[in-house]
Amino acid sequence: MDRGPEREARIVVTGGSGFLGSRVVRALEGRGWRNVLAPRRSAYDLKRERDVERLYEDLRPDLVIHVAGLTGGIGANRASPGHFFYENVMMGTFLMEYARRSGVKKFLSVGTICSYPKLTPVPFREENLWNGYPEETNAPYGLAKKMLLVQGQAYREQYGFNAIYLLPVNLYGPGDNFDLESSHVIPALIRKCVEALERQEPEIVCWGDGSPTREFLYVEDCAEAIALAMERYDSADPVNIGAGFELPIRELIRLIAELTGFQGKIVWDPEKPNGQPRRCLDVHRAWEAFGFKAKTDFREGLRSTIRWYLEHRGS
Image 1 (cartoon, helix red, strand yellow):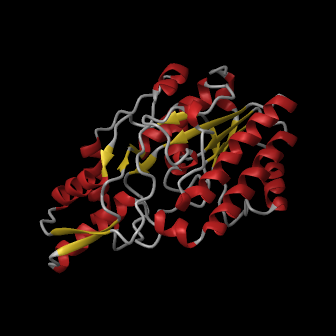
Image 2 (cartoon, rainbow, N blue to C red):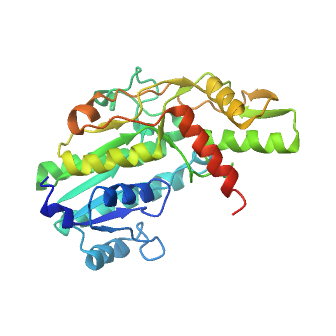
């Protein structure tokens, strides 16, 4: 994309007040984009076709970054698979269709690593995305998000529509969701350790057996990747966005316990699901295609996340 006049383009960031979306807005503004719009859910319900149509009529975007989505950890996905599927698939379908009708120049979809098959060889490469069914507890969410890739490639082929698709790994950072009913693993473990320490409890209970591995990306780094892709990437091929490391959950909880000061016992509940056995991305395409490489040290990112939680949990 032309980086001069294009900086005046009107960009709509769905979910622009959320955990990732708010960082995307700041990243774009920090790179000189002057007309970044973040519509609120109270004004436009993206699951309703008329509201989506009205969003395009009111805001007239040139570019769209679709970050909004219903997300949650294993427990939330297992409890409400239909809800996760419906909300995510309807938002994506309407948003891209009306972007096409409205003449939007570029549509960036933020997908999820949950779209990968359950037993994908590590590191996950983009060409393996269709080699099996996703891990069962996350499949409805992962497949709903994956439909954005299918829709974008179909629209590119039929209409010449410029749709791109990114696959971020598990995100973490300040401002994350710390609700134990719906949070992901890092905020859940931070909260458990902090509360057990304060209550002088001798142990915490963690889901599964601790054997799965995960990769984590600091939210600010992900926002920078999205901004770079919006500026520099125009291909139909999906792109992994990650930090390129693999960490067992057992090691993760030990590190969080150390950083929070919790010295009690860690008890595993094997009756609860482990989720996908391993997760780690091949991140070469993001570097080669638009120059993205994660910068935040994992330990320092955790420190920042813990500090934010301690400062804001009562607010």
